[in-house]
Length: 432
Image (tube, rainbow, N blue to C red; front, side, top):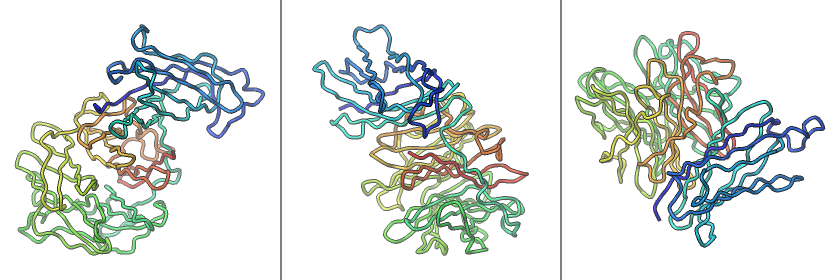
């Protein structure tokens, strides 16, 4: 079966209620509105002739609508007179024999005195079955489904010799019992890799005051700077793919360091992925699927701003860059002149990426999904989070370096925010 991305946009033009409300108050009983589902015809899989949509809610009559792909002049489904509150939306796509080939569902909430766009991206999760996952994206151009932690920032400079100019670029790994963070400490125009850990990913301690990864000796390939890269645990050993260079205007390379505890690291003597004189590269995300490592990195050339690429390895040491690189380039207006800092997780047979824009001011994150880790589809409602969405505007002008993580039913994006003249680290979350 051809792999497809089935894109649906839903517009709620209604009144509404709080998320936890499931029963209408006496004042809300007459508040109704219209829900509009818009399908992009180009993304509807071949063979699909009918799409049905059903809204259900306890205590209310079921609302059913259908769209005939072959005969209807529009690709929209409209629900009239929908009461405010939380409804369960189920969508089925059928072939000419009336067999359901694709289906998906999600809860949708009608918000009072608000016009809200909900973008549902339906992605097949296995070849031949037609099952679909729905990714729900709430918000208009200035709203976000992500909730910024109200006590941000969670990590700031302690004015040490290694971080007196700020902390930034957090790479976080959850080992099942604790959160481990490697981050850049800025001091005297130099960068050091520092370490912190936490039981909840919110309250952090620094068990080591000195850097855990430092530049190499004079004459080595990483003698000028090392910056923490993504970490993966494999065979009871932590592997970090880090950025190193000996000259900031020349080649950037990707090195490998290993550790048994995440605190004491041993470097490989040479880079495992080499940049060129015309393209600087930096590592940002690592995962392993079916015995193959996927390393997502950014390349920056003399003629183009940041672009996202991927490399593959069977042993984590010898790497091959994907021939189809770059895999993500700036195509949406909000992205500016480049896209960078990809952070990727893999769940339910789907790759999910959070990334940042590159421009004079970096102030927004976007999201994309993929079934193979190579070909990506961006959310039509990007960006998913802006600096203006930070709690009380604590990082109103600049958010950068997203790190995407899921534990349990909570997704988090750890990021660096500009506050009071220096970078600090905070996070925003989404519970599903």
